[in-house]
Image (tube, rainbow over all chains, first blue to last red):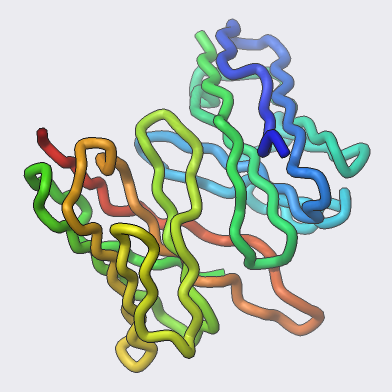
Length: 113
Length: 116
């Protein structure tokens, strides 16, 4: 397996634009997690899914953020409209069981100007 | 969910020396995971130690777990420059009525710097 795949790896956009981050989890993993990492706040869990269903989205900062998982092999994290404070590295991770080892993707480095 | 607290926050050593990082947590656990994050990369799972194990080895890594003290340690022997990274200890999520929450909480980690 290729591991967790994220795209794009880097994204530079202007304030107000819509940003869509993509993730393909490891095949067979039932859990998918979206994290955001900044120097100030460290690694924060934004939302996670189990069997394509969002379980906990309490970490999503505000209504500008939304996440979907239309099927077991694909998830998106959308920011609309984007703001400079959204600049961060966004990681996607997947695992086979709750609390098990999580496999992280390489991350998407987002810069909002 | 609970998170581990790593200590020290930062550690700087010379190549070839051993590095020891400590972790404390608050509630009873059935296992503990350690992860590494190299700068600009995703986290990588290093090792999982179960509550009935006191010590576990993986290559140059040695992890100990003391459930009575709610603490763990990660020892890297004969460190290399490539070991420069942040290291995180992660307890499992609390199991609620109806099943586990599923999410791990990552703390601030220990930032290890190995100088050549």
